[in-house]
Length: 205
Image (cartoon, rainbow, N blue to C red; front, top):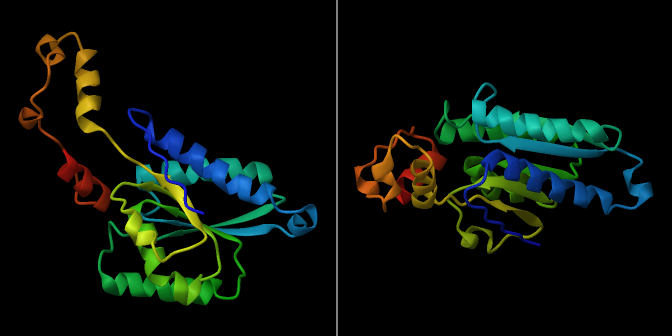
């Protein structure tokens, strides 16, 4: 099953965590009582590192929800850390680490946060997590074709609308009355970094 959801002009983290939690808990609640007597093992793979504000906000939201169901679930969290360690060598080391730690864990579900984690999972899941269902969230540069040969994966496609968001923002700021007219976005500066998600957003802008 594949579900793609799009939300515009809304707090990204709220919808990301809400929808992700709904999908994951729905999966758990559907299991028969006998199947959940043993806690379900859930692995969360995040794209960035502990200490990254965006990454930590997503992890914190997921942990807060699962803490309420700690008798039914066991949550493992691993950080791909792609912003600080880009490159194939690092990805291979991360794969080897996961293989050594989780190959015999019999995971029940994998949560993937942001583009890098999803791309990593698609590349390696046949070798390591072939039969484990996965849920993704926070995907910016999404192309449905990447899941054409995949199964047992669902998630949330995060789509932004920069022009409409900027028009709404400037329309609410009295000191910029001129911006209440249709904007010339070419004249607006954007500040970004070199992450996968923000690079894609800059190209869209």
